[in-house]
Length: 290
Ligand SMILES: Nc1ncnc2c1ncn2[C@@H]1O[C@H](COP(=O)(O)OP(=O)(O)OP(=O)(O)O)[C@@H](O)[C@H]1O
Image (cartoon, rainbow, N blue to C red):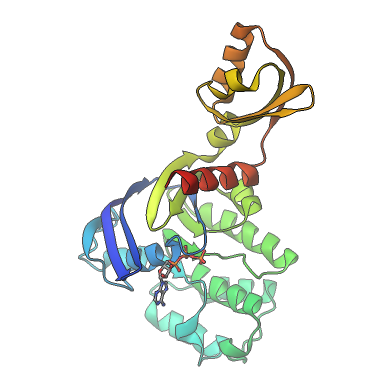
C-alpha cells in the first residue's frame, strides 16, 4: 500500500498542491486524471522527493520516506527528460546501470530493439515520441515495484502506444504487487489500462473511482415524461427535452432506472456513457460547483 496523508506543496503564489490524502493498492494500475495545470506532475515530483513538500506524510510500505529503501522500489518517467538532454541513449544506459542495482541490460536491449532506439543519438536530438520511448525503456529495465509515468503515451505513434501498453502489462506481470501510477489525458488509455482513477483539479484530489464501477454507474436514458420532475431524481446529472422524449444523463444508473419504473415512466432506451464523456462531465460539474 502507498499512503499519502495530507501532502501539501506550495509551488508559488498562484498554485498549491493539496492537502492530498489517498491510498494506492499494490497490484493495480491507477490513472491520475485532471485538467491541464491540475497538479499531476507536481504530485509525481513530490512523491519522488524531487521537490520538497511543505507538510504531509508518504508511507510507501517499502520503508518510510525518511529512508532510502523506497527509492530502489520506485521508478519514475517524467513528462520531459530535461535532466538527461546532454547524453546519448548508450551513455544513459551506462548511467542507469551504475545508478540502479539490478538494472537489466538484457531487458533494456530487448526494449531498445522493440522501439528501434538509436543508441548513439543525444536525447535532445530525438523526436518527442522517441524521447518517451527511450526513457520508458531505460526505466522499465530497472528492478522496481512501483512505476510513476507522467503522460507516457502522449506524442507516441500508434504502434508505439500499443507496444508501450503491452510493456506496462508485462511489467505488472513481474509480480503480484507491481503497481503503476500514470497521468493521462487519454480516455482510451484509462479504459484499456487502469483499474482505478484518481481525479484531480486545482491541486486537489476530487475523488477516487474504481474504473469499471464508474463506467457501470453512468448511463443515458431516454424517457417519456416531464423534464422538471426527472431533474429532481437523485443522481440525475441532466435532463433535457429532445422532441417528444427527455434525454437523461445519470451517475446513478441503477437507482434512477428503478425510480423511473416506480413512477411508471416509459423508458425507451438506455445507453452506457463513454468514459471520455463521464470524465468530461465530472470535471465540468466540479468546475461549475467550485
Ligand atoms: N516549472 C514551473 N515553474 C513554476 N510553476 C510551475 C512549474 N511547473 C508547474 N507549475 C505550476 O504548477 C501548476 C501545476 O502544474 P503541473 O505541471 O503539476 O500540472 P499537470 O496537471 O501535470 O498539467 P498538464 O496536464 O498540463 O501536464 C501549474 O498551474 C503551474 O502554476
